[in-house]
Image (tube, rainbow, N blue to C red; front, top):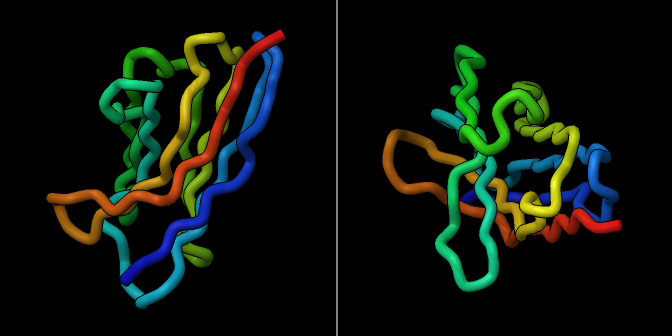
Length: 117
């Protein structure tokens, strides 16, 4: 069983930046990919970004592309999401996620990001 621990959330002003971090621990394994999702109140969780672990290939939702960068540290099994030029609509609970193979994601507990002046 893998555990995911997110950090770095909080309150930031519009136009500001935030870096979310996630560390995977537990049973030793090599992910197929890791990523970030977010959820608005009363809505389904939605994809934000992911990175293919071995090759470092990245994918982004259109809503964050150009403003966000996902990166990973293979030695530490961590994944970060750098978010810039944050907007009020980026306010959500952000979840770190991992897949061992293509299929079901395992999610962390989530962390709140609030963009407000």
